[in-house]
Image (cartoon, rainbow, N blue to C red; front, side):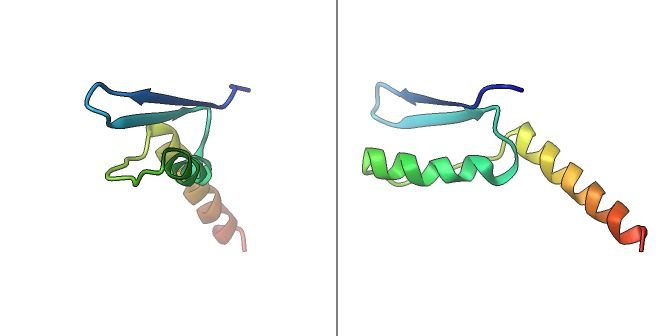
Length: 70
């Protein structure tokens, strides 16, 4: 099992870039609110990583297989 990590970079222009590692699906979304509160900032853009897409696809496949088993 991979440790969960939140990597935060404060850039020279004052913008903040954050990336999660070892988190899958919607789990990473909880950290957006935490960072906004800690930094007294607002998210201006975000995107999902391959890990999010991988879990979403696995969940969809599982749901399809479960529905087909009825």
